[in-house]
Every structure is written in structure tokens, then in C-alpha cells.
Image 1 (cartoon, helix red, strand yellow):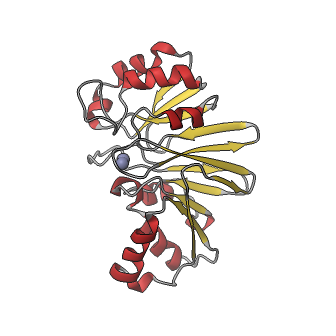
Image 2: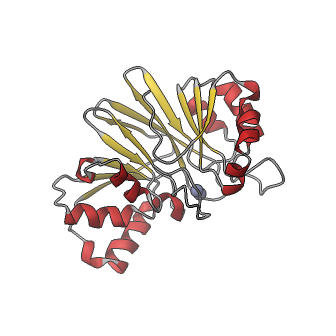
Length: 246
Ligand SMILES: [Zn+2]
Ligand SMILES: [Zn+2]
């Protein structure tokens, strides 16, 4: 749904991925703009079953509240499953008990606090979780298995052993690429040459770059060339509303 960052971009909203099979619809992150992107798919938002939030940076969670209001107004009758790191407790208390009290009890939310190595079966999906390395922020990456195939979404991370182990052998690797190679703060995000090293170890068949900043987009040809240096995987710079069958 969204492949951008916190930097406003006319072509890219913030982070969000919709994963679906015939029975289940899961959102991985729901940053600003993702709710509107869902409507561009002509998707009935009431068909969404679960939302996984990787961490509580605003570009990964800020449309959760608009989603709740929309589900309430559209007569959502299910319980929405929310999966998030333990900090969700304070976050949702702040949202529903203090700031937007009118939404309380308008929609039923079943919250699961994701431990660092949680495994979540959802219908025929199995979602395996790992911690990432993203400054001091408690953040999760997600691997989804279904029908013998898999995809892994790194969320925000610097190169991280846990994420590499989670993703090993995955078919589709959706990796963040927040900035170009160069001097950056340690342990926050990943650059193209770092993704190239990671891809060599994970060995996916396809790499989709997401969380791409305007500077990465402006240099996309070079970025794709660098990421592909050590792998035979197809490398794609993600765009909003791209779809893939896995
Ligand atoms: Zn972040
Ligand atoms: Zn982010």
C-alpha cells in the first residue's frame, strides 16, 4: 500500500503492506495514507481481519485510529486483531482512554503483545516474528508462511542478525532502504550495499525495496544495481499499490 517514509512524497504514502489469501486479510503496518490506498483497491475495509504494527514510529501506525473510526462507521461486526510490541499498551490507552474517548467500545479490538520471537497462526497463515535493530525502538520484523511459500518484511532495521535468521530462504524479501550509502547514525536503517550483503545470506528470489526516501528514489537505478551485486534475486524498487503473487 505504502512504500514511503516520514518525508512527504506525492507518489508514496507511509508504510503498509496488505497480505491476503482467500480467507484472510492482514495489514503489516498502517502509516499515514494507507487507509486511502486500501480504498484504491476497491477493498471493503470490513474484510480486514488483523493489523500488525511493527513499532510505534508515526509512519508505521498513524492510520490505525482512522481505520478504527472507518470500521465503526461502516458497521464492522468482527473483532479486529491487533498485534504489536508491548508498548501498544500505553499507546492504545493514550488513544482511546484519553485523546479519543468517543471511539472506546465502538469497535472491539483484541490485542496481542508480540514477544521478540512470537509465532502467530492465523487461518492458514503462520506469522513468525523477530526483533530488529532500530535505535532504541522496540521493533518487529514479520515472516509470513502460506502454502509452502513465504515473504519477509523487515520493517525498520539496521543490519540485524535476528532479521537475517528470520528471513533465510524466504521467497520474497521486502526490505527497508531508507537511505543511500554514506555516513549515517549507527543501528537505525539499512543502506543499499548493506542490503546486498544481507541478500547474499538470505538468498530470496525477489527483493522489494520499501521505506524508500526521496533521495533513494532519485537514485533508484544505482540503488537497484548496488543491491543486486551479490545476488541473483530480482530487485525491485517498491511503488505504492504494487501487487505480487507469492
Ligand atoms: Zn521507525
Ligand atoms: Zn519508518
